[in-house]
Length: 391
Image 1 (cartoon, rainbow, N blue to C red):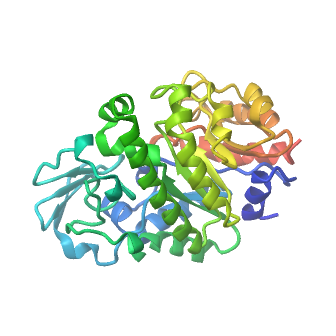
Image 2 (tube, rainbow, N blue to C red):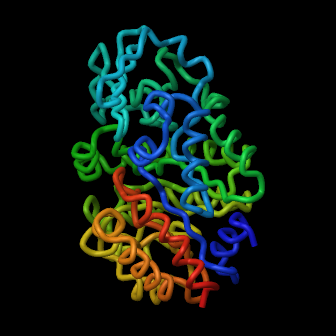
């Protein structure tokens, strides 16, 4: 059984030769652990694809999550110059006057020559809300368009072909041996990004109907973007819904503003035969059953205390027969801070609990911290091999 088959079987609660291992790595970890420069990782499909494959092989992960959009091969045509400091941070000076500060160990920061304030909800046209991507060249703006040159995108041809170049390169390189996953941002995440989190949460209370109209617009874009990624060969879709946990909204708000829209997206994705799972950070122990109402196939992160509120034993009993689990290893207090042997023992315990009936992928709960010791990540595949088949 190869890695691709192993993850496919685990997602369907089918027998596996060993529990698959697949962590989501932070961008900072890719930067610190490979020779790819910040600008190359952020703005070239070649650079990010190389980093993805290199670390998948180093840590012997069974899957690769492609969580940055592909880039235009002509991106340098918009660059005036790139400056690099002694730490390895790079600043891209775009010809339109904008800048992109690319730290050597963290996410990019967009600095605009003209301040683009986030819109007030009264000024937002839901028909112009289709898909926002903070990781593309130029970052977020309203109305959204890809790249640095303002335009009114055609909703029938919204996503440039270059967005799928990283997927194409990874799929070509790994073939049928490794599970390749694409990522979309949930409608709720995009709503929060549109207004900022504080204003977005206030808008849920003051303008609930307008928020729902905007969510409906983003739902359309999510479906189209997921289908385009599936056409390019991904084996699963991760829906990033990071801000739908208990630290942001109540269970009641979750069922009102998240469930209907994610259900529609998930239903459309599953019609293609491709599994979809959801990444929600932090406190989700009070909404596991509600999450299953979205029709997802799996739940990602499952942050344990103190980062979150998921007890793996209880979660397995409550919803473990309905969905697969991916995660539950504390990325800070365990993977980052403890010894390799401590990590191995922690992984063995989670394998014992999570693997019952299959349906488990061993993983960090959320993204692996930039400075997580490589030997700790290597201990995960070792633990999986020691543990063997799902019990």
